[in-house]
Amino acid sequence: MGIEAILIINKSGGLIYHRSFTSPQVDPSNPTITSTTKHTLNSNDLLILASTLHSVFAISSQITPKALQLSQSNINYTIPYHPYVGVANPQTTPKNNMPTKYGSFKGDDYFKEPFHNWNKSGLKQLSTDQFTMYIYQTMTGLKFVAISSSVLPSGTGSGENNNNAGANTVNINGSQYNMGSQIADNLLRKVYCVYSDYVMKDPFYSLEMPIKSDLFDDRVKSLIDHLL
Amino acid sequence: MSKSRSSSLSAHAAALSSKSTANQSKFFKTLGEDIWKNKIEKINAELFVMTYGVIVQQLCQDLNNDYIKINENLFSMGYNIGVRLIEDFLARTALPRCPNMTMTSEVISKVAFKIFLNITPQIENWNTNRDSFSIILTENPLTEFVELPQDAMKQLWYSNIICGVLKGALEMVQLDCDVNFMTDVLRGDLTTEIKIKLNKILKDEIPLGED
Image 1 (tube, chains in turn blue, brown):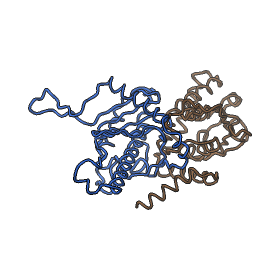
Image 2 (cartoon, chains in turn brown, blue; image 1 turned 30 degrees about the vertical axis):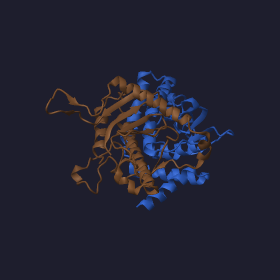
Image 3 (cartoon, helix red, strand yellow; image 1 turned 120 degrees about the vertical axis):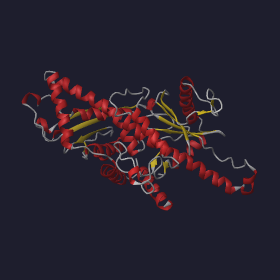
Image 4 (cartoon, helix red, strand yellow; image 1 turned 90 degrees about the vertical axis):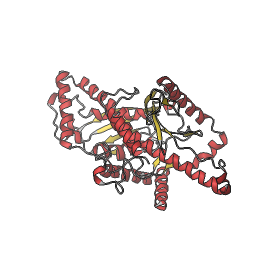
């Protein structure tokens, strides 16, 4: 799962962090023009994107059909733990390549148990044929957004898959859909862990304001780098 | 592998949604102990206790032993810690929202106090509405080596920073509470008691998408 960008939106819908992980590819024949396979957003667009997401997120929780809301009491909101998402796996990584510590989090991973998802009726995932966006919201109202270049398999798309069409394909698609979203939730909770250390414990950071911290940047980058 | 994962998953969900408070209580106890033991980096206790001592002492100097002001200062320092520390707590535990104050009190004593101070205070003195309770600190790491001077005994709440932390942290999860010391062994009382009273749940501030 390639992560293109990470965004953090504060509880009032303001963008407080944005980081893109794709380096613009320079066209060798004409170095002055950078090939923009994907449109890059300027900071104003990003702010609009953030507040729009914030509103759509809120609206989506309002348009849940009444019938569904009533039958929803037994939904399990627990997300399974996927081992070593975004961190070095001690079994496959030589000892000297292991990062020594994850801030105040002891051990070789930030957490190791299935966890509760606070986002029950809000927008979780948004996909197009080009990308998938995942949203993780915390109890304090903070939103962590990951934009991934991997897309949902279209199932009925290309001819070669048609042989397997039917219940089977739906099933496979279903599980892949879940897997992607679960891995994204695991990753985003880790970004939250890093945030709680390197942003919240920075005495010079003022709450709700844009995050400008190199330490935080490095840690987020390391999470993304360790993703397959 | 997948089997063990799914069984631990359902155990986790069952414990949290369990109606039985005994089950829940046990779950929080093991959770707090596990995090304290395996998941959190520690610092030297003496360094921590002395750092806090120095802060209080410096405040006394700066404010000419005006203990009322010192209490306020400690409280507001704690508040500023609490509104930040809650993110650490939530990132670490990912616990669901508590449906009532009984569960909140369990989480505070068995998980929060455990992972940050390695103590598990008693919860007592519930009122009839069950929206106010007392935390009895049977041990208090902050006061390990402390003896208050005669003039401070009547007014200073030495560990008032803890009240601030609780107030700030609870406010960030939309619980508007009053938190204050009732008694303190440092002042010659028999117990150390912090009272938490829920004023109201800030319903408008609960992030949309939670229910």
